[in-house]
Image 1: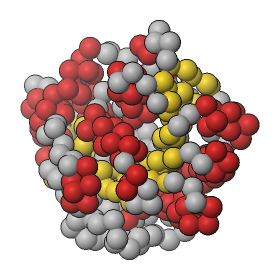
Image 2 (image 1 turned 180 degrees about the vertical axis):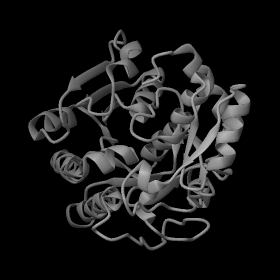
Image 3 (image 1 turned 90 degrees about the vertical axis):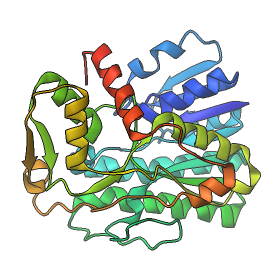
Image 4 (image 1 turned 90 degrees about the horizontal axis):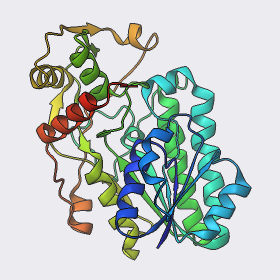
Length: 324
């Protein structure tokens, strides 16, 4: 098989490329390196079945050429991270919406399968304990730039499903919940890389908000294996799937676990959201996925629990001193 990964030099994209190549497939990657890095794919360059194009996913001619060469498209290119979203709202919206539009138009010409990597953020401000694929999206005010990412990804989903309905394009939508692992950077606000780096450097571990918010962290290998399996099954087409884990942890608990695992003397400090991001910043109190649909569809079961996940990330950071 020949696969195209948009955003393939990013954290998730590079792991996806790695596993596809290990399976003997040919992989084409496009990335503008705005949040991705050549370091993430350096170890793949010697593989003759790996091809990388440095360009924006909004370049229709380049995306069209790559789409023509491939059988399946994994559309991962997007603005990511709370810090990136707050600091660059125009880039966030344009990249997410226009980038997805470009990919779908190219895929429609060739009738290629497109798997869209969406996000748990599309559930918005909902206060449910567990999120199901059929749940409503409850978005915040347009005056809060924090919600621009969620809204842009929701539009991506609407647009993809519209292409399916109106033009017969085979699309699959996946909503990723807090995917973590080696090669993820804390530069744009990702919590675990930031906590690990702070703990290893003996700096204060900064918890934003009061630390009572809960998250379910999923190891990247579990996520990309699910993405690949979904793309292989025809019944996946037209469906929306949560991809995540069930093990919940509060952010305060997470900070304490990382401090203990790293034998760090760092102090845990709390930073108000208004100070960390922007005035009036809003967050989701809980973000736990209902993964029963994915379990039934592909027999999904995460192989990595939180403890093992953190051990692997800490080991990676210890080996790679250039944390950012």
